[in-house]
Length: 250
Image 1: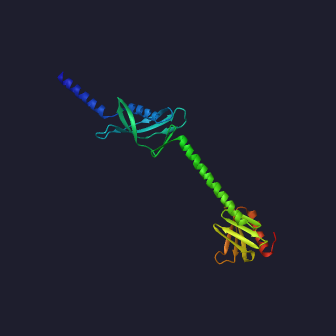
Image 2: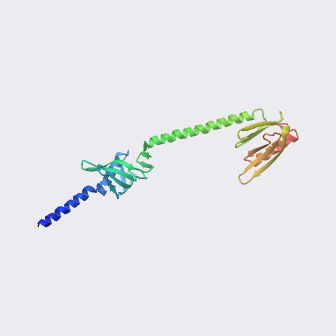
């Protein structure tokens, strides 16, 4: 009888040791995780999938760290959010609770809250940032458009015909017998008599054409003007021909 009692006492000791050293059970971890999600979300949520296979505890530490793989769904949302990570579980007043997230993915959405690399913001704040970012981008585009139009107006001043495509531009004044070119940031005007030759090429592979003019200029003897329309390219080829060879008056 005494041997049986001793065996029972030993068995109970083993059970108590294993129970005390194992940390929160699977169901206790899931319950603590649900409370953690609800406390950190602006709306109620439910756990669709939950798995936690391993818990560890450093010597002298009050908490267990447990790996968690879980999918959470907000009650009135159609999307699910993956909340995988390593969480710290601490027993408080007889109940296991999550007291922190030791490790988390780089980006996760929790209800109406966005977590990114440790930064937490509401969806409203995120959308506000997106809105102002979009406004800034639109402002920059408009500013660039206004500047381009202003530059083109300055370039075309006192010239009767002009054309621009991409980063090139050409203008002609038969009244002043002048022709003007722009390629990138380089701009220069010449007398029509300085134009020595010109040729056109239409490229079917990218639906673009070029009008190449050779001028009397040591520093920049060749200018290439781009066209996005073949008809427009042909018109300018003829315009240059008549302006140089036939003294055309516009």
